[in-house]
Length: 186
Image (tube, rainbow, N blue to C red; front, side):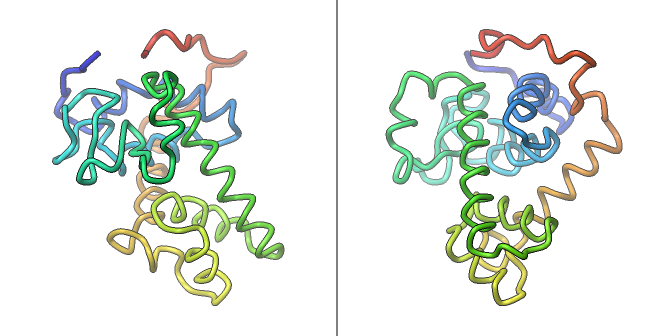
């Protein structure tokens, strides 16, 4: 299903907010950060160069990256070629699993890392190699030093904070959990 572009950041975010909030929460991730990740990766399917715009299974990054969270088929072909990839909810869950893998890798490599540095590293490693990000953190350097634009995690955390401050209801599960069903956005 191809969606119409609402033409605003918040309009684009509203298209996926309920689904991302539920899936991120179930996976132990901050919904605002996962929404910001999707926005940074594909403008939630409306970024320049993303084709076809509005298609959750579209491509960007010269055709290497797929879907809302721009999952690179060179490293994740089993998922990108699976039937589950067609579901935005499954894409979100897969992106959350990659974040969890990054968190585990970095926390094992650097057991005394501050939680704020760990989380910035987790998101920087979504864009760059987890090994490179870990080396930067080990040296006390900015984890964004090897990311696209050298601002990847900083952008995500700034965007997420703005969402939490301006639109808290979009990134908070209702009491008792959400009513999102996986079929709602597939």
